[in-house]
Amino acid sequence: MIPLFRNILTLTFAVLLVSIGEIKAQDTTLSPASISTPDSVRVNNIFIIGNEKTQKSIILRELDFTTDFLYEWETFMGIIRADQQKIYNLRLFTEVEITPLFTGDKEVEILISVKERWYVLPSVIFQLADRNFSEWWTNQGRDWSRVNYGLKINHNNVGGRNEKLRFSGQLGFTKALDILYSKPYIDKKQKHGLAIQLTYADQKTIPIKSEYNRQVFYTNETESVLRKNFSAALRYSYRRSFYNYHFLTLGYNKTWVSPDVLAENPNYFQHGDNNLRYAFLQYSFRHDNRNVAAYATKGELLQVTATKYGILYTKDLDEVELNLVANKYFTLSDRFHFAAGLTGVWFLSPQQPYTLVRGIGYSPNFIRGYELNVIEGQQLYVQKNSLRYKLLDLSFDISQFMPLEQFSTLPLKMYLSANFDHGNVKDRNNIPENARLANQYLFGYGAGLDVVAIYDMVLRFEYSVNNQGEGNFFFNFRAPF
Image (cartoon, rainbow, N blue to C red; front, side, top):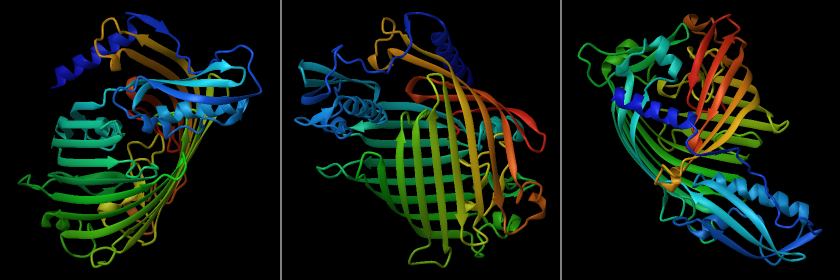
């Protein structure tokens, strides 16, 4: 498994570095077909090419203009640019271009050209079970037994309707089975959607508490299964406008732990039983107006979520959790952009079952420089900042060597970043072993290199120092916010 994985990485890196085809800078700007542009324009027809599988209605849903309506020219070009980004953020296409074609002084035909992704992606699961790469590398001593492996099949465009079907079977550190099906639109006006998810997992080694701001893992002498978890959820979605979404989720969760776990931590579930059962109801509002969802350089993201754990039956759990995510992305120039993000978590009760514990160190609440730590509590905020410089923006055309059109272009972007994060965790229980970082103002700063590649893959290489004077190199697989 490891030699094969290394060979794949080597081959991919070689393809990116060697000029084996046309290399050109990406250009996402729009060039009108006419040099002399009118004050206003009317759209006669809309044509779409390249959508071999995707239904036309899925693309038209993202358009903020219509035919037989007179638009002021500059306003119209701004609408086109925004619509181009919305179609790309469907994550169904590798390339999207909207071009106005003049047929008269004030009349245009609109040509939408897309290049579809590969939608059915069978893949091998090979991922670390720990919170992040640095946790595995440093705290867990690069233990290869803490790796999950298996098979995942994603169909990201079932029936050409942007429906998602995911199946994954996983072995290794955590044995798991996950099935998800989502249908974004169940009505003709394309505003209402449904999704269902079933998940099962069991583990022989689990975190049971934290001490000195590090997770404490436990395995019993017989190496038997210590925790089993089953969950089911039904989610309703409502998209009234282009950028605003409402989600209502009804779910059920059952977690069993071995009596050995309660012997090590009697407060693991808090109610004295080794079974935790509860239904939950969750409402979430999401405003997403980012230019690129995977690695934004312009726009904003706001998400507010309220979850009630324990509805109708509250014997095992009766809790309320509030979450906030607020990110803003500023384009300063062609090369520079600034990103700022805020996350917050609030529990109403002073204690929670350990399976619900939150804190800095658990995604997405990281402070750079504290990747090796967990700071647990009932209330927290994290504020992140990154000033980024676009170092490289290229696209490799390898169509003469790659028979699959969906992989014929390899984009590559690199950004240098200067980072500063800060935050605080309020632990009402004041656990002495965690007092060094809990209920304290924390911050971290440093520099990094971000790589954005094919199919929105993000790699981050960072060196960060925290306010405890601890510095380290950190490697991550996704954008920080």
